[in-house]
Image 1 (cartoon, rainbow, N blue to C red):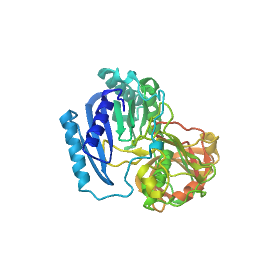
Image 2: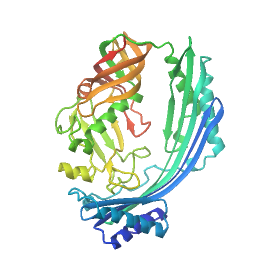
Image 3: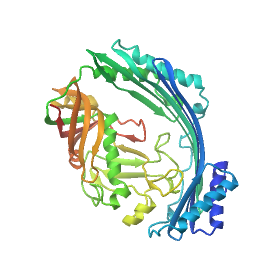
Image 4: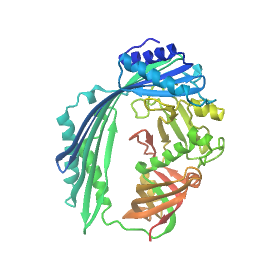
Amino acid sequence: MSPSNAHEEIAARLIALALARGVTAAEATVSEGDEFEAQVRLGEVETLKEAGSRAAGLRVLCGQKVGSAYSSDLTDEGLQRIVESATSLAAISMADPHAGLPDPADLGKLDGDLGLYSDSIAQLETAFKIEQARAGEQAAMAVDPRIDNSEGGSFGSHTGWRAFANSLGFLGSYRTSSCSLSVVPVASVDGRRERDYWSSSARTFEKLEKADYIGRKAAERVLRRLGAKKAPTQKVPVIFEPRVARSLVGHIFSAVSGDAVYRKSSFLAGKLGELVANPLVTVIDDGTLPGLFGTSPFDDEGVASRRTTIVDAGVLTSYLLNTYTARKLGLRTTGNAARGITGNASVGHGNLFLQPGTQKPDAIIRGVKNGLYVTELLGSGVNIVNGDYSRGAAGVWIENGELTWPVHEVTISGNLRRMFEQIEAVGDDLEFRGSVACPTLLVGEMTVSGH
């Protein structure tokens, strides 16, 4: 291992110290970051937060006994204590027959600039960030006098480093940056208040949506909710706008995560090769797409990031696995290890998305005679074990292919397996506003419970 920066030097040093103590294998993670957040409400700064962190973690194996420790003390004495703590814990732990590092053949990293860092964010002045939050809120409140309150405008930024090393000779690091702006206006009519929001996030400041656009978009959304009422209980088609449709993709992730699969606590366990959704549905996990939030050159075990098709034209083709869950299932890692500073890796995702279709969202709406267009989901009534789905919702009622009156305080329910089978239309409006994305989706029938 030949370190190329101070973060890699610390990771390599931890591995060397651990091996000198006689451990069988070791993994080290080093993370450093600076974050900022400004919250403005009604033009005044409410909160201002600036924080930095720097820490290192170590996971060691003594045979198949595992121990982990971490510290923010990165002096040589501090690193020695991390090693002592991790090896002491390994000595008293239970042996795990599936514990171990990845196969050396799986180790690797993507080359080239993945667009994860921009100096434009590090160079932003505090006063400018505050003004961005204030400008977004002001733009929202200027749209309509019925917008008479606000839960604030918020601007955040982050820059950081991450380095990883293991005793198989892997050593790598990468730098990241991000910024975000959100606005939450409140509108009222006849004594009833409604709130909504709009936000934007990007790796570079130049790609962040403009403050006035975010404010106006948030205003449009909250004004659309005024006068909302419950809908009668009935079974109807339900359209999920992209902002909420991505939660359905998140449920697929939970169901194909190796942890849930080997525990048989997923409605998709044992379904590889089977048709589990409408053939319109293709779901992909891709950690290689430049500039996105789910991109990295390698996962948290040193396995190169890759593109994995999870559902291909409705057929379940892959689970998402780290080394441990792959061994449990007799499969191979998909490069989806995720962890904090230390401890055993869990399963994470890269850029997870449902592939866009060819239909315009407006055309999908025009094709529904009577149904619900969902713009917000509330609660967490989703059972990944059996797929049962029940969540609070708000949106707009569709009559004869047109959005008509606003809806709130209803519950939409069904079963995830059947919902994915009943996806009848997929929009062409895929847009990454985070690491999980989905276009507009039409589910042929769900129960809407109102009054």
